[in-house]
Image 1 (cartoon, one colour):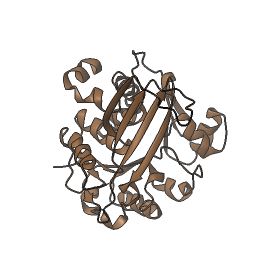
Image 2: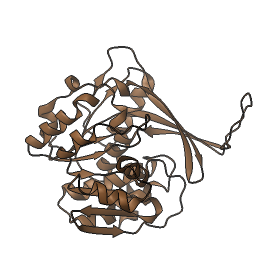
Image 3: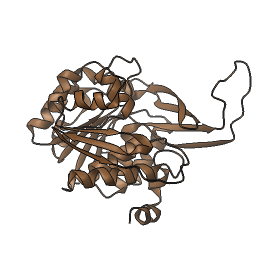
Length: 305
């Protein structure tokens, strides 16, 4: 399959428990009022939703030999994501799992990384990745085994003529290191508002945008319900968010990325990419989990139309 986008990233399942208190006492049995199990992890959600939009996606990851890993891959296979370069762990480590506890606009996120930490540069088929038109990496700081070689990986992709994008997602250690070496090879940087402020070392999002816009050619900052802002040099575009009946916001940022990259690799103008990304992000929130809305193809096409 000729690839539009090659993604290197992590994969796990999300377990989502609704209705639990934000402050949870010890030694009490707390009862949720609803539960979902679905595909998790930023990279896998992006791969799934990007393929659901009609982009040809290849996904390289490390997965366990357990039932959770098999189920997670089935979600991607259902959307014809090319999984031919997925590697299985050689250590017996199980596939990771994330427990999400939504509390209105905020949520607890508890993750067992599992095989997330095991993917290494030597596991990647560089010729395969270079066969795509665009390269993307998500969850930078969850790739402990790959992290030292990520700048080298991006440099290889740029030298092969690919455009590139990065979504760091959160840094569990809150250090945000290594970006100075990586940014010269990143064409599109896709942080959310909090991540942009953390990386730029400021509490003011406009100040963060100003600082980061000097470090990457195209900066796209996700602003949640307020939409998103794109900065390219001194040129700035703002697109308002879309109003929908929100079920939960799990995976909304990754769904934003899928909409933006889908339009970008098919040659759309940046303003159209931004507006379409806001629509896919909003659509994601209408079902529980990051991919469930995108599994209904007819509903997806009707919403986007």
